Amino acid sequence: MTLRCPYCHGDVDETKAVCAACRAEAHSACVLELGRCAACGCADFEHILEDDGWSVVDASPGGSRRHVAFVRVAPRELATPGATSLRLDLARREHHEGGVLVGEATLSVARSEVLGALRVELASESTRSGFLGLLARRTRPLRALTLLGRGRGLYAPGTYRASFRLPLEGVPATRDEPGAPEHERLILSMRLDRRGGALVASGEVRVLARRAPALA
Ligand SMILES: [Zn+2]
Ligand SMILES: [Zn+2]
Image (cartoon, rainbow, N blue to C red; front, side):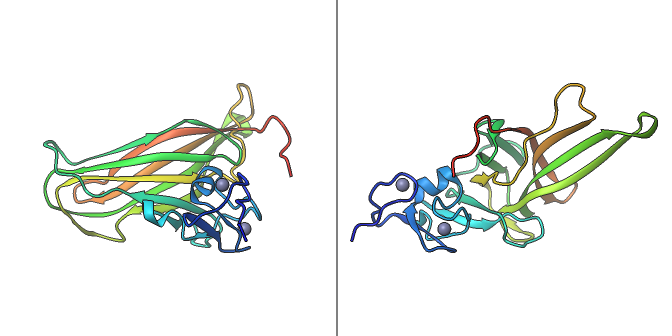
């Protein structure tokens, strides 16, 4: 019997992802592109592109495993001269609802150093003009995951690269129209604890409303 990928309908060979909920088998590349199971919609997978180094990590702020992300850590590269630094690169700043946020973190460690885990958080910062024009600000974490390390640990000198794909399923469209009473910013931030001050990097992203109704 030949298995068909529920996303692209092509044959599924040995490189596959298995949905943890409905057991559907799909191409790992299709799962990474769609960010969820094309058969049942859940985002929890086993055996995803293990050959290519992708793994599934919990991305729920409360650890409820309602949201997952795909993470791939590249082999450490040789040290480059300079100071220890952290950089965030996002493939795109604008996404449609239900899209996948693609980014890469680059940590350059100049000399052996004890550092914390590299954490990524996607948060919504909303500002509402209220009574007498006072501004009320509210920050709501939407996704949280660890890219490197588990806690404090010794990092050898070198360059560490971690790629991530963060499915935006359930993240509402950003409300930042001019003149709107409530403004919202979606901030993706990275933080790595370090003696003498954390290394941080962040970028703003937008989620655009779907124009056409989603196909069932
Ligand atoms: Zn496929
Ligand atoms: Zn499924």
